Amino acid sequence: MPEGNEVEGKDTPVSSFDLGDESVSDEISTGEDDQVEKTPRSGFEKVEGYKPPAPPAQSEFSPESVGDVLSVPDETTQLPDIGEASFGPADARPETVHGADDRFQITNTAAYPWRAHASLRITAADNSLWIGTGWLVGPRLLVTAGHVVHIKNSGIADRDGWVQKIVVMPGRNGGTLPFGSATTSSFWTVTGWATDGDGEYDYGAIVLGESLGDRTGWLGFGNWPSLDGVHANISGYPGDKPAGTQWYAARTVDSASNRKVFYDIDTAGGQSGSAVYRFANGSRYGIAIHAYGGATVNSGTRINQHVFDNIKTWKQALEA
Amino acid sequence: MTVGGTRIEGRAHLADDSPVSEARVFFAAAPVPLPDVATLTDDDGRFSLFAPAPGMYQLVVHADGLEPATVPIDVPAEPASVELDVELGG
Image (cartoon, rainbow over all chains, first blue to last red; front, side, top):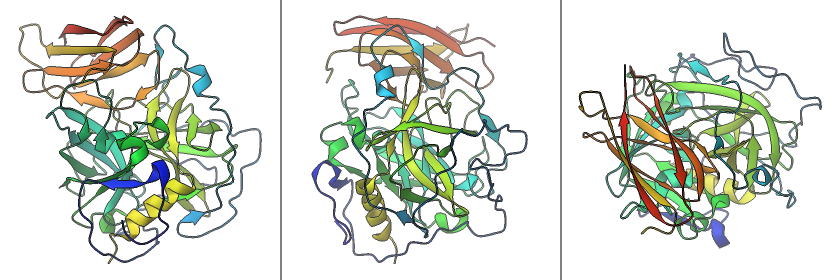
């Protein structure tokens, strides 16, 4: 475990590799050139042809602190999981895409912020292949869902455990890989997921051997005490669209508990690990890690203080 | 290890039985929230997934250039296994 704010309990980190000593940096980068989308004023990405959802009735929450990486005290209360209350056993109900599908394809994926999102090709322990999504938070670190890097309760013999490898393709657009690809077998997650399979601890990270993030740039991440009325954005690589294409959608956060964020943003299998992000002070900050499709709302693992501390520590450990 | 629920195995192929590899397979509907991942069919078009709870599921298979297939599956309360034959058409 690298130095930093060490986290205990079910947020205790576990990795698939041995760490060396590294140093620290907290900057957000937009990458190596000027292909950077302007920061919108609405809280949603401004994508030509995409009609953003109507703004919420209440005013946008203002962040309490400003910095390259935001962190405010974990004052969230133990609110009931309103979204989960909708998930009771029942007949099959549409999952992940709710009502009209308003996802919009991103084609200029070589531009920031789209190039900070990566298509993932995962080889599980039993050699089965999977697709997922991750997002860069530093030159060599991507955040993703825990079940992307460590499979748990799969019900299939020899599938559970650390995945064998992941091919990371930032800014992929179908067969075009503007930043190439990197293959890695170095991952992080926490005991709450790897040992207990607790969906509230379903987050992890992918460690790259090369600094792809220096070219693509990366997103920030932050912990806010309230997510009421926050505009949430998701871009990722769903399996129901042409292979390897990136799709974006946005909505206002439905509800949040201390460990989960619920939103009616359309997703599909393959988008696990996507950033659920907001705008603050002209930059993009992940507030949750998309993980589950549900009957009425989808959900992600909230970046609360423990999650924030772990991601920050994992990132710092890689920076020379 | 199977811990209740139903193991779903299948094969995606064309009308002439030639396999469809690299197809994306996932649940588009389920009685409980599920991880939002998709598996890829292997060189023989085969895939395996697990339905963890009883109830109605919709499994979908997507492959570029082909019409997607949707397969309803009624998963019983008792542990079981299901074998699917999924034909994809142009």
